Amino acid sequence: MNIVALCGSLRAVSSNKTLLRAAARLAPEGVTITLYEGLGDLPHYNPDLESNPPPVVRAFRELIRAADGLVIASPEYMHGVPGSLKNALDWLVGGGDEFVGKQVALLNASPRSTRAQESLSDTVTIMAGHVVEEASIAVPLLGKNMSEEAVLGDAEIAGALRGAMVALVRGIEAARP
Ligand SMILES: Cc1cc2nc3c(=O)[nH]c(=O)nc-3n(C[C@H](O)[C@H](O)[C@H](O)COP(=O)(O)O)c2cc1C
Image 1 (cartoon, protein in one colour):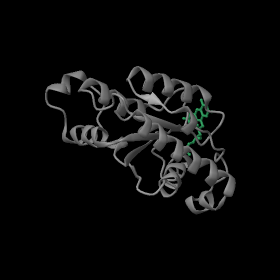
Image 2 (cartoon, rainbow, N blue to C red):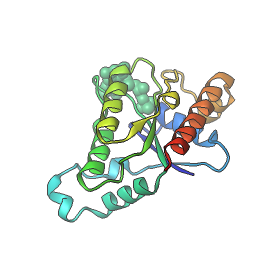
Image 3 (tube, rainbow, N blue to C red):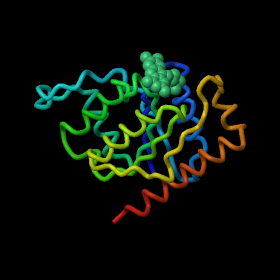
Image 4 (cartoon, helix red, strand yellow):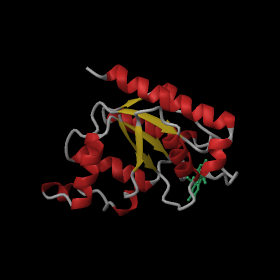
């Protein structure tokens, strides 16, 4: 099973990225979680480009099409979803049906980022994706400066993350025809 991870923060030491990298290492056997690193390289969404989408956009769409599910972790910026992440999601609607029916886990490194989380959930739903609620958790990493190893070494956090990934895999399996 192949799951793609998207991070709404472009920061090198992003706590959401740390969460995703740790989740990848806690994935159940036979499940690969790959962090997409190209979010910041996608051009601004422009419907005029749909007739001949740039190669980075084509590659991103193919990556999402081939994914069995998605895990998204994002900060909240000014009560909203960061523009870079929203831009990436916009590219998945303009062209075709890559996103349709995808099972999605929404992680969050800051439990106070409730507005962005709600907005993201709304966006995923209108894109005909499905938010797996049992796989969508907030983990309080903000301000703790925790490394990936520290996250994996924290029994409570690692247990919650592993449980979320197991729930996502169950959601993907349950949605299969
Ligand atoms: C420009 C900016 C705006 C922010 N706005 C909010 C906000 O509206 N609500 C909130 O809870 N946190 C806000 N934050 C805090 C971020 O959500 C927080 O730093 C985030 O968890 C960092 O994620 P990262 O470590 O993955 O980059 C903001 C941070 C920045 C840099």
